[in-house]
Length: 155
Image 1 (tube, rainbow, N blue to C red):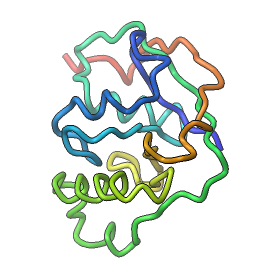
Image 2 (image 1 turned 180 degrees about the horizontal axis):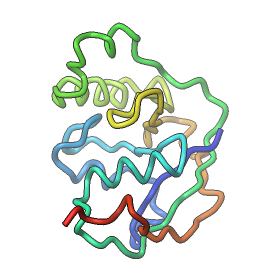
Image 3 (image 1 turned 135 degrees about the vertical axis):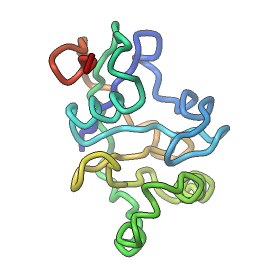
């Protein structure tokens, strides 16, 4: 299975999940919890990152990582959780608890979660502490210029 990740030049070879651990306000992990965020497609990576950085911020020196993960069955959160009044989209503490539990239990390598921005698209959260994490490999790194109408400010 292949997944994708956008990263700045400094971290383009880093799959440790330390970046997520150093940030406050992540959707699926709390501060201090390592987790590697990836997406099912380059386009979803761009949307997810675009929601983090305002359109008027010019992002340069970004790279798209194509990552191969072993054919492990991803852990799925129950559909009822996502159908329940959209609470998962607004209550970050709730989703962080789920992500932190996924890492702490250390039973699964991958947690498949829906994108909050695009219906029926998915992100794959990877546990860097799992025994099979050593099988997760970057297979290709592409330069990823942020250009086009999508990344322009609405001045």
